[in-house]
Amino acid sequence: MKVVFITPAGDVRRRKLYRLGNLIYGHSNSITGPLILGHILKEAGHDVSVYEELYSDIDFSKLFGADVFCLYTMTSNAPRAYRLADMLHEKTGARVLIGGMHASALPEEAARHADQVIVGEGESVIRDVVEGRRKEKIVSAPCLKNLDEAPFPDYSLLRTRCDCANVMSTRGCPFCCTFCTTSRMFRPYRERSIGSVMEELRYYKRLGFRYMNFEDDNFTANKERAKEICRRMIRENLVFRETFFFGRTDMADDEELLGLLQKAHLTRALVGIESLNQDSLDAVNKHQKISDIERCAAALARHKIRLIASIVLGIDTDSRSDLERSVQFSKKINAYQLQPAVLTPFPGTEVYRQLEKENRILTRDWSLFDMMNVTFLPKKMSPWELQKMFFRAVKQFYTFFSSFRIWKIFGAAYGLRRIAFSFVVKIGVFALSLVADFGRKTHLYRLKHHCYAGT
Image (cartoon, rainbow, N blue to C red; front, side, top):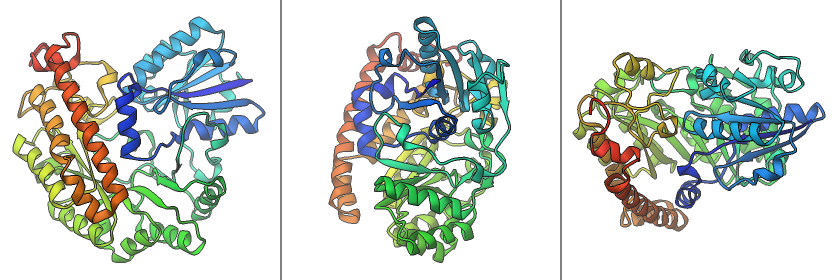
């Protein structure tokens, strides 16, 4: 059979300005799930191709001969996935399968648009579903207990742009922050063998990748394991030009780990600062203190590891001054990038259940659940005030003149990227401000003009 995997992208993410900003911000990569599931089907003799809408448009007319379409959903791309599913049903006789984090949280919703919905990690069921042995509308897939049993992502199947390989050396996270979706989709926390991880890195070296991401929710959760992976990367010449990873502030407690991360070129780290209000950190179950954040920032700078500071805007216990302080702190510690995220009630999370119980969710338009739009009623400010804080955060951090500080600290290439991104941010925020003023049917207009009930 001919099987096509598609990771849709929402309307905003398919616009040229967003795609440009995305390429400046980092290197293009691909969701690993479809590449793993595609590998399983390829080995079973099927003709498989994989597409990502984020980086380029897809000519769907060339895909209409497929027997099965598999659509991957996150919450913000779910409406696009549903539209594509309906279109594919209308124009082809193919079966449509939907899976991913959003479909796993709301399978009955996804089932209105799909022939079948796969809930959970699909490795153990994908072949049976595609080949017709599993016929139930909603197929529950057990988590993969031994991660070494999963094949590597097969990049030969990918038909769209990709400059950076993704590696998942673990699934899940030992922590469970109230707003996090992946720690619920991929639970319990599991680790691959280090030998399996090394073999995957050799594969990417053979393919010629220069950039790599560890997509683990928390690569440094097991510090001794992370250190051994770095040692072997160095010893076996499996170091890439640059490797990104997600980490926590507690890695600052281990100087040996930091030194190995630097030598293995794991030099771009996203760390969840979230807030500089201890009550807020406790409220989201972060298990860290403000002193941990400050110590981590200093330690990463000492080891020339570029920090991407992630902050959450809209936690109930945060005031406007708390949000402002988080942005200023990120500038003070010379964070390479800032990733401000509006608190978003993703289905399946504790935050979603709380806000739904309190009747504070403003909209169920899932395309707005992208961590850039306010979709709930905050406690200490209006929804529009919180939305303005998001715009203000990116404008204050990504200024033209701050780019030269990044240039001085990290080099010309990173400084030039930052200059380009500062212009994209400026244009983007200006355009969104116009939408809020004049786009009468838009979410931003409704926020600004208090058109939602309760605002």
